[in-house]
Image 1 (cartoon, rainbow, N blue to C red):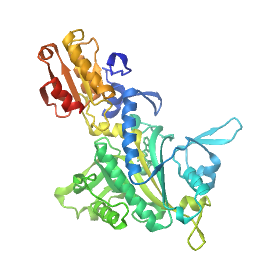
Image 2: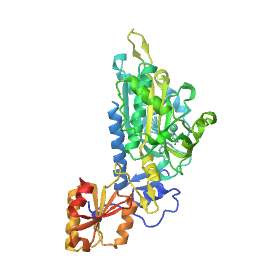
Image 3: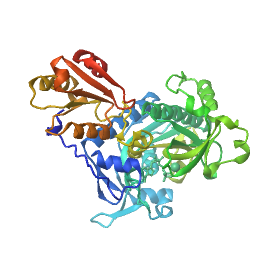
Length: 437
Ligand code: ATP
Ligand code: MG
């Protein structure tokens, strides 16, 4: 893709009102533009990242057997009156009237809607369990939207909902989700630590928040370093075997990890001092079990084996997809700009044409561009080399293929790895092999 034909507006100046690195970098690298307080438009590079995150989230949800649906953003207030949450939800809910004066709202979450859809369809215990998810925009009228997409008012969330016949079934669904979450975050290139979270009136241990470590995080976190070392993608867990899932869950939850809300000094003291990690974290996901709270209040039941109706047990599972864009940058940047993990990068590589108009340089650049297709960005602007280097560093492409007249004459290019800073002098074919294969 040619930069001269793209909409990739980078900014040299640092936006004055952006307080944290990810917000500044998202504006400067041309990923987003604010359109109203806490509301953002996604520009091409930002949208590519958002779609990459969605794709990984989706693949891992599908891998545990969750099925994708798409529910609307607008909901009827009556639905929320059934669960009692219409009045209970505070000013964070954006309430709207349609032309007939009917009360509507822009969904801050979808428990009520999915419960209703489930209830209209599933009538027998034989159709359980079910896990349904969607990736849809939410609106919460946050008192203090800030840090760009990290705490927006309109934001993209993956929310999944599980329905089981009983508590034991719900535990299995919960554990599968925990595994899917750990794998998702690892594939996104971040370490999200699962931390015990408040279960409210339900009690028990089935509520976890997933936090990425970053100095700008809003929560204080305490955890056992053992949790940082795990490779969740390499672990073989048999999803069809509750005992295998049980061992996995025990493995995760025996290591201490809590936010300040749930911190327990006595338990913390049992963690060996050299493994105690304390810092700040960004919440990127939250999973919890809440029993029959919604199925009961909304009168949704299914028939059991003995013919008696019962209220299915539910869990809900959120991932902050748009927040993750910012959180990944918080975890991966330096003074020059973003350093994208390959899995979510908007472009795999940038080709820096240091001398547009030079026949040999142009030819090599065009060849890379042709082979790389949509995955590479060719900086063919008539700009100084320094400008191109700076923009490539700012945008954070994992690789830079630097093509100048001297090397081109000998059919050689320089390949720079954005993360390590390592530079290799390679033949064109070697560079293609290394980056694009
Ligand atoms: P927080 O404590 O950060 O306000 P929450 O507990 O209200 O989050 P949940 O209801 O658990 O959030 O939503 C699931 C996920 O959606 C969160 O883990 C977070 O990643 C994301 N999220 C929640 N609120 C926002 C927001 N205002 N902007 C961006 N993402 C959000
Ligand atoms: Mg939460």
